[in-house]
Image (cartoon, rainbow, N blue to C red; front, side, top):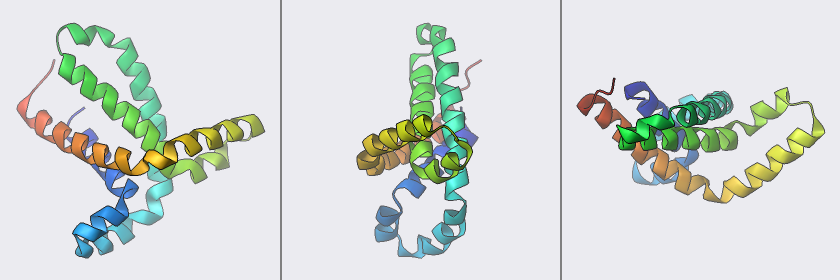
Length: 141
């Protein structure tokens, strides 16, 4: 967790809510146009990394005793990466999933997550900024 994770999560948030970003800053269109073609791969990698982060957070649950905010931020980062990664990378992920039952389950999950994409994107931007700031302010062993 830190600077790189915070930047990555904020980038995911921006990709999740491009209309909101463009409404506030129309000149950001050029930058968004440059990264949008890679959105599927960014999402797929984020989904896998988010799943691994959730596993790591559960295995590191002992951190709650000493660093509860750090652990909660770590878990929230992983959950948001998984959710936004699935939403943004569903097309790429479906290329690699061959089992029809798994594809159907993925479609069900996407259908549940899609209405909340904007909210997840805004939370991801905020949490990403917090992670960047916290990475400079705090060092956890």
